[in-house]
Figure (cartoon, one colour):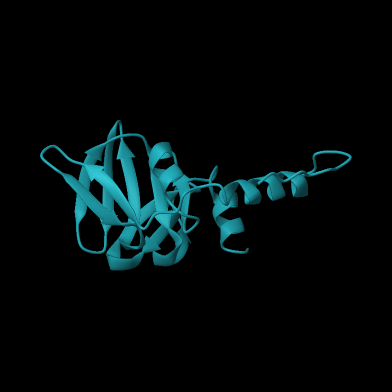
Length: 135
């Protein structure tokens, strides 16, 4: 199926529409396969609270476990659904587990998540998070 958008100029609304349409082209899966040192695990996407990266080590924090593997954060984000948003160079959160945001010491925000999880929200990623929350 082809969608044709005609506009006199590429405004922010047109760009948003294009992004919205592109989201429908993604495959939505309910499980995410994760390769660890000794096995391949499947993680239910709806159980992921946050994903963090340090160098090339990814850590998945779920409602039932913490899983470590190697990879890139942007590659994980591409596989996740629209419930997830990147909040820093090092982290992705599931909006369904976000409980609150509060100001941090360095001008960043701190996201309080379910199961006593926390993560930093950098100023660079805050506008997208606020937009996704409808603020």
